[in-house]
Length: 537
Image (cartoon, rainbow, N blue to C red; front, top):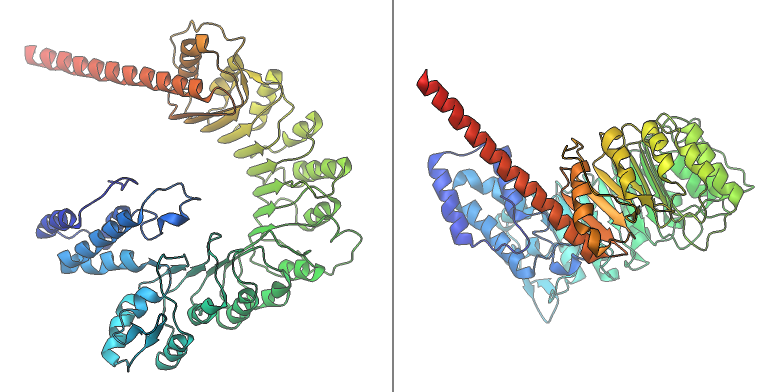
């Protein structure tokens, strides 16, 4: 049972249901954990104001009710207690909920202070819950009080061991604005167990260098680092302190990434995921000393700038046959030339033809048929997406495209001219691994569907981009798509006739319901026939 966004579960009923289960047997801890995680939902502890990225609509009231349900589960029986508390405390928004467990942590003239001594019993209660925290995801909490800096000083002196001994992740979402007064808390958190740190763009500029320095001294095992809109100078010397770094993402860096930072990144021998902007001029006509076999472990690369000579220089450092995922986003304002774009496609098609499984291209200023032809060399592609641009292909190109990518599972190719809707039969007949398809369709040449034979194609999602849907042809279009893709679960449209395409989706689902009912009736009739035959014998 999943917890939907509009579901409210009274904690009393949850406790009663779990009590009934507890009277019979206690499931294994792994099963209990899965049950409680499903009860909590993926956003159970995230305030509603941060839902813009996730699309979830859980309110603060629903969050409180879910937390109440987990507390009720923990109090139901001893067998449930530990697992339910683990799920409840796994992710917190700041240290305030933990510090409130200490009796002397009180509000005195607005900020929180310690108003008295802290006993060993108080610390034991604190540690009982603190050891369950794996993630601190800072979020703005309405009505929350500030904590006086003396509290952090007292905790660091009185509690010699790490206060969150199992902390794995510290994140600051992009919607959060934090000023320097949160810095003591962040420094208190970082420790040898932290593996992932995300510093969002709204952080005060003074926080980032200090946090990076603290991480370098206390968290050498850091494996993932994400920086949004922060200066790159703080990283140039610090990266050497993270030899185990496996994932590095630098997004919206305001200054030009220095050659020294490129050199520091190239020394990370375990780095398998990298995202960064590459300025058009930084790497051009420059000499840079690199280690032997730089980027030999790199599997996923996301470049957040346009095709340029600097990008081509950077791609030349990456060994052939290693990349599995490549994402190149072109942003207007970066200088580029046609020769730079041509060189990019030459590198992709020749250097990673056997290894590349996922390719995303965004907003290229020009894309030619020759570029498309070069991409056909990528024989192991599982996912190919073109966004904010169009592919210069037509219906006659589809057989070659499908033959070149036999393992394709997700394909997004908005094209100009639009593909005739009748050309979709190429995918239904030959691209048997495809689960997601986005195309630009023309429905002007559609003919009535004369076949009653169903395809066996497993396509689940069809996205129609900027394609007209004549009202007079809704039934024909629906039947045509249903014959080709009988297992379709979602048909989405954007840019043109969205309401009519929604009606097409409804008709397709109606066809599926009829088939299901007929199939159920047929199976029931066959079972009755077999039963009568057995009785006669």
